[in-house]
Image 1 (tube, rainbow, N blue to C red):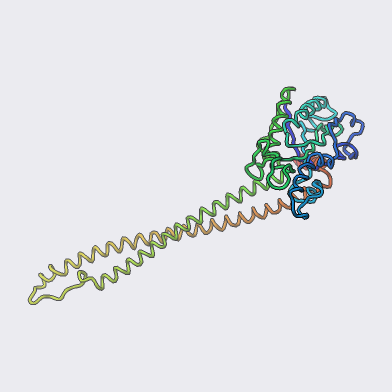
Image 2 (image 1 turned 30 degrees about the vertical axis):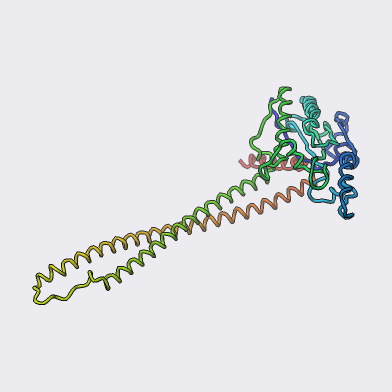
Length: 384
């Protein structure tokens, strides 16, 4: 049996997770099957975690305006860190791992076993709220935590930091999409996959990290790659143009050489016809002066013709290549502008998707999209 693993970064609705508030997609008759691991007030957790470090920090401050009265409010009003983070894990989907299906209890067992080792595996993530839900479409687990680091030289010695928490646990990112959080999520998926395997379920991987992005995010990445490729091609063409300019400069040098030849014809004594000497016969004059001059002129003409021919050949080659490069460059610029325009449209669509996600919730929105796709496929089949 194969099943996928879904990992989602949640919004952290603690009241919903603890069922203090019941949403429309919750079947209250199955709520008793849920597992509530912990649900501590987050402000209390902040006091427990940071009060000592806060006191040490404030005691060192000589200026009153640099002291922090309430670390919770300090993080809440700041822009660098979130108060807490939430991760949601799910095995399979509503079709192959339904909360009301034959494998529901197996999913519950696996997720429960996964959670039991979570805090030990992640010592820099302080879990304060965790709930396994069996009263929605598919069994899943919400884990809310405060990421922290210790030994900081600036600010509080112990402070909130997602990036540093991940680094402390050995997860170092290499870019925006391959960041510390994504590497940690992949590692947790592998842990969950090992537990699944012990229960006879193989992890069905959909491919590379791109499959875990939303469709719009993935399309944006692909368009960005195409734009980068076009930019690279344009750069290559620009290098070719530089090469052509260098050749043109050589032609200009050839023109200068021809000018020197012309000057040589006018001024070089060896290329001038001497006056006859005394009673020199025409035959002697021809042999001594005319024939050598003609030979020198022939050699000079050969040199000039060779250079002229090479120059014209280079000129026509450059002219043709320059025209082709210009056309290719214009075409690449047009494609580039279209891709950038498409990228902008995708960004706007993504904003719309995120807005709808806030209104309906990710799960509900995905259901609406699936219904729309099914309806479209049905119409296409009917049209055939």
